[in-house]
Length: 227
Image (cartoon, rainbow, N blue to C red; front, side):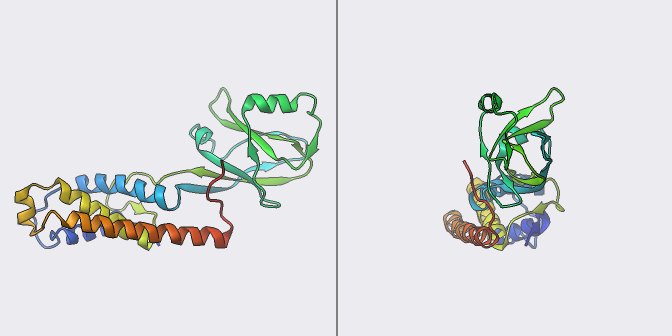
């Protein structure tokens, strides 16, 4: 399940008693900005902000260096794991200098790669070196940290599950209440303590979203974190 920024914004407006009038205490742009920040928080604390890139590179027998897809330079710091598709085994990340040491005297070694190192070439394309050199064709899937992109308009997608979306709405509304003046609270018929209740309920929804994604990960064999 996912939602759009417009749907979540409407639900936040409803919590703030703003759904029927024009006396909005904050503009849509301001609310979307707060929702964007909260979305990053919910994503980081629920599914960990991990994205799977299937077939990040295709291994060829006798070749040890490949371009990583996606090849953006940000992948250098965000790759969490490379996994052999043939047997779902993760490779161990090593420093590039350590990889050079491995290659010295072992450059002809072939088999199933179990270690990798990343580097950026002169054209700022991310390359991966594996060891030992593949002895047969295989592919590598990549898991990398990739938090949702900022909500820029009402059609922006919120890539969270149902509990995550509800947590987002409640936490956003709670934050907005803490920013209101006494006059704004009175105009919206709100008491300041409602922020604490919404924050508490939002955190419970966040726990449910975390449990949901953990079950999905367990059922599908999805990697959560590799260090």
